[in-house]
Length: 124
Image (cartoon, rainbow, N blue to C red; front, side, top):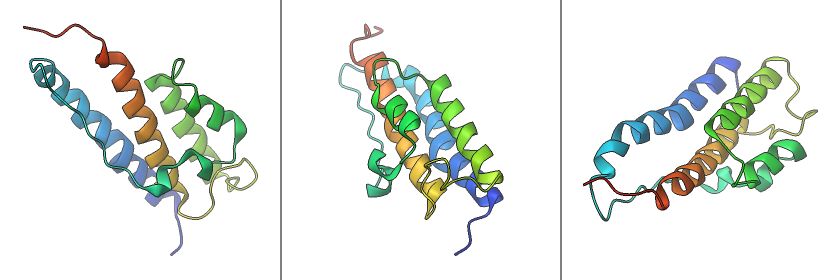
């Protein structure tokens, strides 16, 4: 199956941005519950070891400094490299690349949300 830039964008929109929008929409309701949980289902494709770009891998692993803005920059860098046909050169996965990157960023986003709200005071 040939990966296209358009399909890569669609994959990122679905896997990462879709997950992010649903989570943000539900957070106010979840904060009303004393036992709310967010569970994001990923896959083995979302493992950071699939990304060989050392800078990106370090950013994804640095949970204390990771932000949604940094994830957006990572995704934009990936899409730029995809468009310029520089995935392998710049350490991105070349097979199922958008799926792997989108799943890795969903995993990172889940860690950001956990850090942000795990110790946050509950409403109500």
